[in-house]
Amino acid sequence: MAVGPRPGPEPEQPEPRSGQIRRGHSVERVTEPSSAVRVLVVEDDSGIADSLVRGLARSGYEAASVGTAAGALDVEPHDVVLLDLGLPDGDGTELCAALRTRSDAAILVITARGEEPDRVAALDAGADDYIVKPFGFAELQARIRAVLRRTRLADNHVLKHGSLTVDTRVRSVTFKDRDITLTPTEFDILECLATDPGRVVSRQEVLERVWNTHWYGPTRVLDVHIAALRRKLDDPSVIVTIYARGFRLGDCA
Image (cartoon, rainbow, N blue to C red):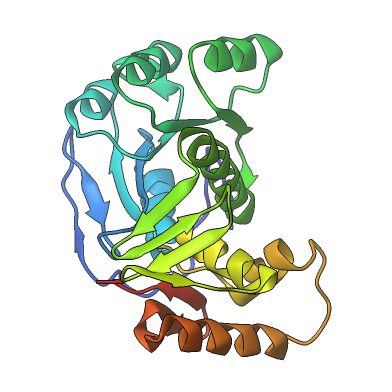
């Protein structure tokens, strides 16, 4: 899916599982599991905003949108902000600087402005990445994952989700106060899921991140390792299979 200033008609998509749409300075929100990464889309073009919110929600994020700078400053902090620079009530670069002083959210600028001075100004204002419209949705997702990996590894090497703890520095795992011994591959798979526990991670993404950036082998090997992880954790609900989409972590209560 390409996203740009003048999007064509959207293909029909399944309705989100739950949603709420309000206009003006209010928030349009489509939610997935409560543990999902929260993404705020700051975009005055409702067509682009709606497309991004629904695409992100289908990918396992908790997505919301506002159409103004004032709206972006009114809502609670999010984990990721997708920021358009061309807003009707303020300069996007100044908004980026204001958001950076308020939170440690990852800020990705998404804009039609592709000149070097615009890029430099936004990055100096605190943006973590800069994407010029039009762009592909797969690229946007990859950039979100990359910036989350950078910020989370910089902030904390311990990933916690319920009673599951994954320490990426010493490569150790505990679950329900038990030390879990994993093979290097099993640990890498679990770390891939624990980095963003509410998001559904596709089979292909797991294969490429754990084994090789260009995986061409049989995918059955992943099922074998997932089954081994479930046995060692002694709780099959820890790793949830989402039919035709991939895997995500369960509640890990």
